[in-house]
Length: 450
Image (cartoon, rainbow, N blue to C red; front, side):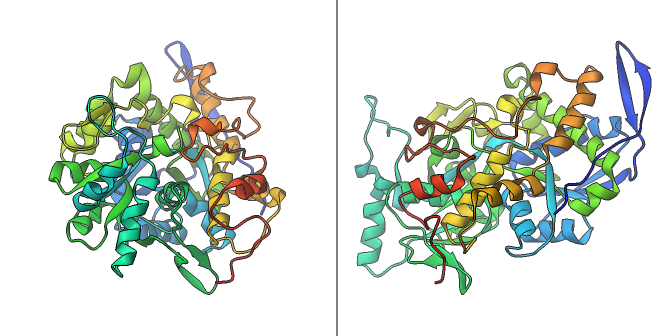
């Protein structure tokens, strides 16, 4: 598919010491979708701080029932863009599930997820977890501690069930990654069986994020992987224990993206840049001055029109801490990252990681070349649009020159083995080599045939 050429017509007006570049917008009234999670924060902040209005955009934000409804809204045009699972634009573009060309000019955050188990499962896991000198569990907790529990369920003829939010979600891949790193097979997909449960030791199924705690409490699932505030909600309700954060699975892993259709970007190039500018400003605000604005962000997110959870529950992770067991509060300053570490830049290597996990578990059923991974990433992730927006912000005095990776080729340096739970390094430039290095999962030359 052809990359979309993004250009713009700009007029400038003097505004203090900088020039504000006012784009001639093709569309100025927009409806944007989101799911009730704390990592939708850039959208809420861009709205509440007036950044959309600064760009001449009149935005309505609408919560969506689930990720499928959200994606369908963007594809059908009911939504002009949305807070999306990073796997959604990639899966749609390659035709896994609903087929449509979706792009992302902006990555919304790093980290932000956790894996929670029921109190019963936690009590069964605890004897398998090393303790620190003060008696608290030593983190990160390996899925090896869960393996004997799963075996005991098998011996009793019971399935061990866990929830994730969508088949192409970060949560699905992170949960699978953690389980596999501890020797547990989370199951495969194939063209003939899209359950994702072929040969599974642990059976994963979809539950919408806000329903995770209630589903766990009902005993339908034994644990789940979800974004905040729904892990901290389990602690607050006394129904479960988060055992690991995604920061501990993969330090500073990519999370959500802002997704729009390729047709929207082609028809509305200036509007696309204006949206990206507003979202970059929101991300800067969320992280600036060592997260000084996070308490205000928590108040915004706690409102019913956004996340609608108690401010204390949202604050538990948004302000640099994370509570595991009741009272076991630990410093995790980078649990939610919105701008630091080039969090908002849409790196090709981030896209390729998602594609390797789709391939690993059979959602991409046939072998693919390294060139295919690169080309697919470039069809979806659009750093060219991002950098055009960033350049305007720098020229306007709204951002610093050093805040953006101008010379990047779209690939991060390889993630070192020490930063990933299974001790296997990730290099986006060699996706097939990476796939072959993973212990459980399809290898580069294998096909998923059920």
